[in-house]
Image (cartoon, rainbow, N blue to C red):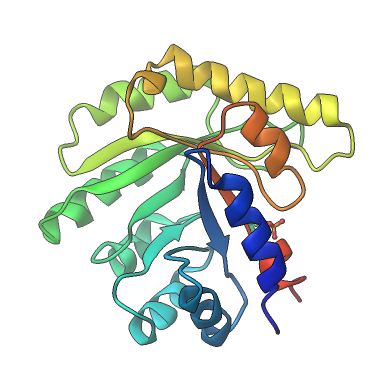
Length: 217
Ligand SMILES: *Cc1c(COP(=O)(O)O)cnc(C)c1O
């Protein structure tokens, strides 16, 4: 249950001279763990489950930036639309349209990342390159969502070359679609096991859980 403060300080120091943002992934961890990191200055936290996020948001400080990084079902968008800071895992136009609708109801624009399928594994969610192009085109007609960039998860593999090539591919798509020309664009890739590789490949935002909060049940 104890937060690894040493690892936190190390990571913050590593990122000090770069423009990489750390999202602390707190899924399945108690609100007290989030508070411990918040007290050290961490403001960006990532959650995977809607109900858990809603419950934590209600009891934790209002200036926390809540990132939704899990697989989001359309019928649950409404619960997080009032406050969510950035939704990372958008993998269908239908979901994007629902986020646009709920954002409008809340009189706001919600920042979104489109998830690209880069891993070899079939189980990981995400769009392929043609689906990504189509979604970006369609998003131009959705005024209450702002596509801030892309997100991806590499294969769960010890082979660094495989992981690096997947990250490089995502970075290539990021460039192809000219996100790299926007100073506030986000390329969300890298987790506890592979964040250093991801940063080498151009990541601007890493999502780190177990390294900070310990293994999950
Ligand atoms: C759980 C999760 C993470 C964090 O994984 P760790 O290996 O614990 O750092 C990052 N991204 C997504 C999408 C996740 O679901």
